Amino acid sequence: KAGVTQTPRYLIKTRGQQVTLSCSPISGHRSVSWYQQTPGQGLQFLFEYFSETQRNKGNFPGRFSGRQFSNSRSEMNVSTLELGDSALYLCASSRRGSGGADEQYFGPGTRLTVT
Amino acid sequence: DAKTTQPNSMESNEEEPVHLPCNHSTISGTDYIHWYRQLPSQGPEYVIHGLTSNVNNRMASLAIAEDRKSSTLILHRATLRDAAVYYCILLYRMNYGGATNKLIFGTGTLLAVQP
Image 1 (cartoon, rainbow over the protein chains, first blue to last red):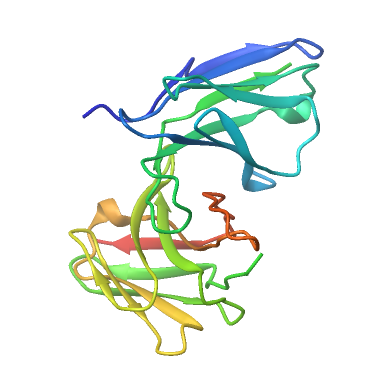
Image 2: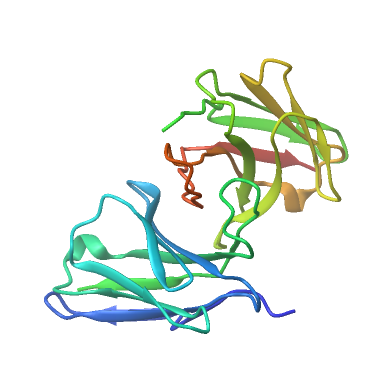
């Protein structure tokens, strides 16, 4: 069974631009979560989608948004990029999204560099 | 959000057992205890989770104290590949009974394995 895939793996953008990252969960998984990892802040939760609905959101500005499609694939978008948005963006999927009882599987991440 | 406390770092010798402790004194009755690890340059990897009883899987064992205020991840025979940051996370249900997969990562325990 294929794991969680994220595209692209690496991305370089300029301040002020916007970016869209994609995540394909493991087949049959309905929950997709996004995380940002930086050396200073560690791993921080961005948002979670379950059956195309945003179920939970972290403490990030409105420039960060996401969506989930009917096939469970998810995208996250960051508008008006800032230097501080440079990070590894990780996607995780789980089968039941049952909250606590379900293990999550992470993708390899997208390394975003903002110059 | 219920918090966990872990030592910043631990060291082990190859082929010896490793006991990674985690304190979670404010755990609630419906919080699951999850362990993830992150190897260098990779996304986090699920290790094990439990609610009240001790759990075993092919990777590790999870020992949960009777009062659930602490737990211990046990790697039975450490290998060099087990060198990683280990995160102990409580995965909770929202107050009104909704489920969530929001993982709150702390700083974790950096495990070094010596040959």
